[in-house]
Amino acid sequence: MSVKLRGNRWQAYVTNKEGERFRKSFSTNEEATLWEAQVRHADKAGLPIPMQVSLKQSSGMTLGDALDNANEMYWRGGKSESEYAYKINAIRRSFGPKSSIEDINTNMIDDWIMRMKKSGSAGGTINRHLAVLSRSMRLAYEQDSLTKLPMFRRQPESKGKVRYFTKDEEQMILLTLKSWGKDYLHDAAIVACDTGMRASELLKFDTSLHKLGNRWGVYIPDRKNGEDLLLPVTNRVYDVLQNRKLDKHPSKDSTCRRVWARLRNHLHLEDCNWHTWRHTCASRLVQGGMDIYRVKEWMGHSDIKMTMRYAHLAPKDIVSGCDILEGVA
Image (cartoon, rainbow, N blue to C red; front, side, top):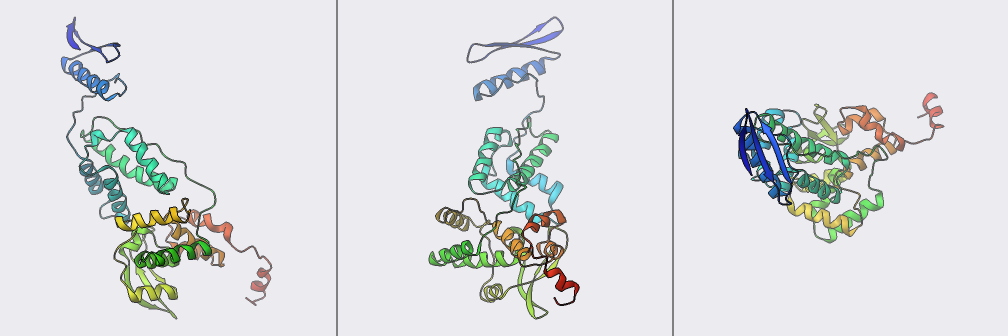
C-alpha cells in the first residue's frame, strides 16, 4: 500500500489479501492516507472495501457512553423515562456497556435480533429496542464520535390476533412455579395477569392499597398515555399485595429471567413472553363484555387503535341489545 502525488492529485494504491488491487485519487494527502488505513482495516476484518473516505475519527466512545448520552438528550425526565431505561439496560446487558461503539456492527446487531426472537420477543418489541440503539448510535455519529453506522433491520410486526394465555395455560404456569418454589414469580404473574401492567409499571407502582368503591385499588403513576390511574384489583391481587412487596420483576432480575425462560421451554410456550400477561388481561376484559373505551383506559393505551386489536374477542350476542334498549340489562 502506498500514497503518491500524481500531478495535483494524491493517489492511494491498495492490494488486498486476495491480490486484488485498488486505486483511488484524492484532493489531499490526508484523505488518501486515511482511505488507505480504512481499507487496511476493512481487509483485515473481512469487511467490504470502502469506496468513500470517512474523515471522522474514532472517539473511543463506549456503547454505555452513547446510551447515556442519548438518554440525557431524548428520554430522561420524560413520561416514558422508565420504559426507555428498561430498554437501555437490556441493550447494555446484550452488548456490554464497555464495548466500543465502533465495534458494534451489522452482524452483531443481527445476532442480537435472533437472540431476542428465540427468547420470544415479538417484532414490535424488537423494533422498539432497535430504535433505542439506532438513535443512540446516530447521535454519536452526528456528534463525530462514530465513523460509520451499521444497519438496523426492522422486523415485521404482527397485525393478526394477539396471543394470550388460556385459563388452562395460566393454571399450568402458576402450578409449575409453585412446585418449583418460585413464589415470587408466581405472585408477580398473578398481579400482571389481573392488572395488565406493563413491565415498567410493575416496577414502579405503589403497592399500597387504596379504597375504591367496594374494592381496593393501586396507584399507577406516569403511564405511557401520560395519565395516572387508580386501578382496581381482584381479590387474589389484594391477597398478594397484603403478603408481600413486589420490589423486582422477572424482566429485570437475571435469576427470574432464567426461571421464566426455563418455564416457557418446559411448558412449550415458546410463542409467549412476560408481556403476554398484559395481552391476557386485555383479552379477558373484552371477552367479559367491558366497553372497548373502558378497556383503553384500564390498559393505559394512548391510541384506541391499540385497544381495537382485542375487539374481535367481544361477545357476539346481539340479542342482548334488545335487553339494553328495553332497560332490562
